[in-house]
Length: 146
Image 1 (cartoon, one colour):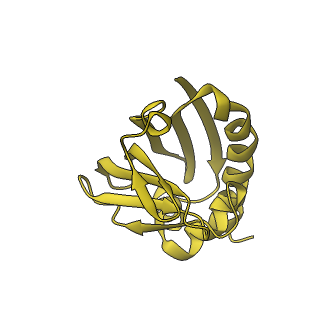
Image 2 (tube, helix red, strand yellow):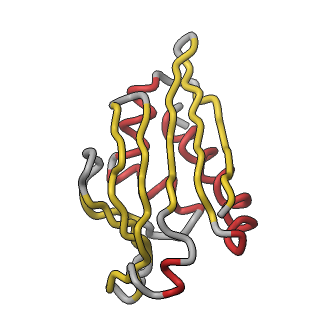
């Protein structure tokens, strides 16, 4: 498992970036870089279950490991979802879980420095290195009102 790092400066307060990032409507818009129609089911509250899905019923089953509003959120991915069915026991699922996806929000002079750190299996590294910059650019557009 490798750890990838991404960051972006968004000309918007961290509270706005946080809200736009996690709001169901705007989440769908910025995560299109990963899969068109992506959405989540569940809660962003610490300890709560959350599922990240595509319209085809594929995705990840996770829990929120930490939630410090407007500062830090950590997602612990526990398994995969195929055809709407959670799988946390197969060799495919266990080969990359648990994996963490962490977001850190720091405000400087009214702008937000958003950092993303995530564990990724080597076979998905190229995909994530291509998708994350696009997703963050889209989130920046949403937050800055463009």
